[in-house]
Amino acid sequence: MANPKDWRETRTPEQAAAETEEPESAARVRAEDDAATRARQAEAEAGLRAADRALEDGEARLRRTRDELRLREQELERTSDLTQQVARNAANLLEQTEQIADLTRRAPHTEPQSPTPESRTEGDT
Image (cartoon, rainbow, N blue to C red; front, side, top):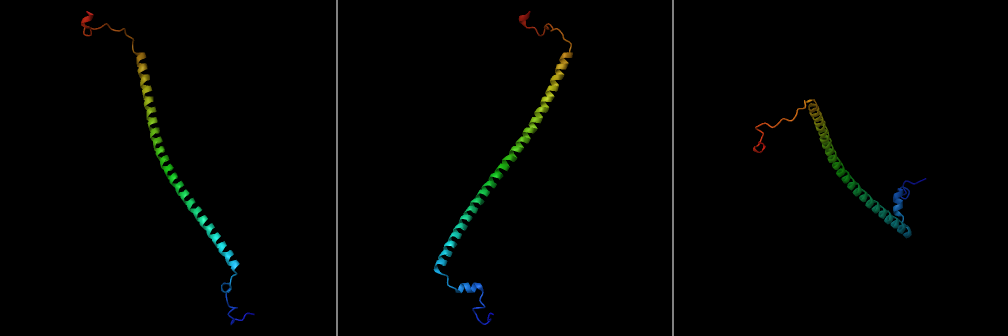
């Protein structure tokens, strides 16, 4: 049974560990392990910074691509509108051409008229 008045028995495990002297070899191993841990942490941090830069670069490229796609989409809309307008104009021209051809087919064919006196020149007389 622990004696509450004995200070050695009322110490926390952390206090007890702090009061014991660590052997030199254990201290050296712990220091090497701490250094290796710090090196791994630094390497991981550098990797994370590189990943952050890569993500930022990727995001910037995506924004540029999105803007370029938006411009191309607008150009395609304009091109589509122009194509539709050209198609409508072509249909109108075709209809007009058909009307002219139909009127020409229906018109009575007449012989060419002889030149009128007004249309004659002095060399014709």
